[in-house]
Image 1 (cartoon, rainbow, N blue to C red):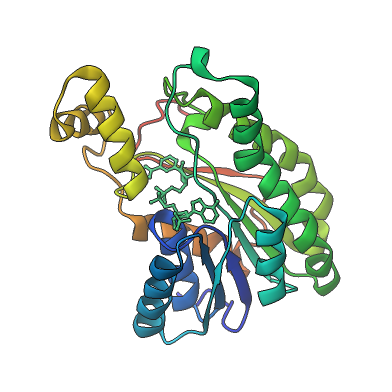
Image 2 (cartoon, rainbow, N blue to C red):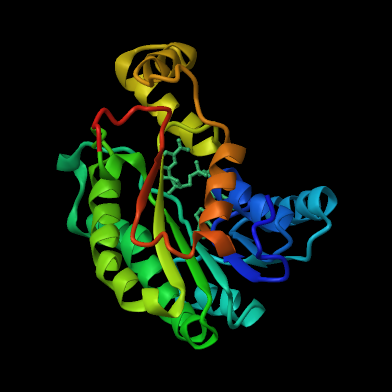
Length: 259
Ligand SMILES: NC(=O)c1ccc[n+]([C@@H]2O[C@H](COP(=O)([O-])OP(=O)(O)OC[C@H]3O[C@@H](n4cnc5c(N)ncnc54)[C@H](OP(=O)(O)O)[C@@H]3O)[C@@H](O)[C@H]2O)c1
């Protein structure tokens, strides 16, 4: 399917690995010019080389902490008027909510709510002016189905979802869409570290902890990042202009609701 976005410029935050990388790859395959980002320069350079080889697209790596004002400036210096913005950032480590002091809670809200809003503030007016914009926020299935120990992540991301629900309606007439993609269990480094923490807490091997987690998923498997990237790219397509303010779960059926 031709997504109708060849030549569009995209910024994909936190994209040297994992789900962000998969979104960058799918957009590059669709013919976009893509700014990719991460803090580790070697990992980022390797990701850029892989993407160029796999897709032939123009890939601009920006080594930066997306949560810092300087990092955000670096991203927009590389692409001042993106047509597509994919918001992503690391989530806070799993912790009992009793162990969260005020600073940790503030840091979590900054990482998983405020940073995305700041980036949208920078991107949105040029999108409105050119009557095309696609914003996808990577949040988490835990926004709809909480996971013990990820309370801060779930709360901050639910805050982002509610914040942007109104913003999405305010820009829809300009063909600017804002959607959310909610991953369940995906095979990335983040999943490995979550599984290792859970395994230690339960006195299980990592394999046993993963099997226990996968058993809760009706599809009985983990998701593959490419499946996630393809959904993100579709939400960024020309054809998806009538989809906005939506929370798209990609979780192998884990969320048990009918709606
Ligand atoms: N995988 C899952 O099953 C799952 C499920 C639910 C929710 N999620 C959420 O989805 C998001 C992506 O997860 P993932 O599994 O793809 O994670 P991942 O495999 O750990 O990859 C994270 C990526 O983000 C970059 N990054 C992290 N912090 C950054 C920062 N401050 N500035 C710039 N880049 C940064 C990392 O590169 P550097 O380390 O070099 O910066 C890396 O490229 C996270 O918010 C995660 O909590 C994932």
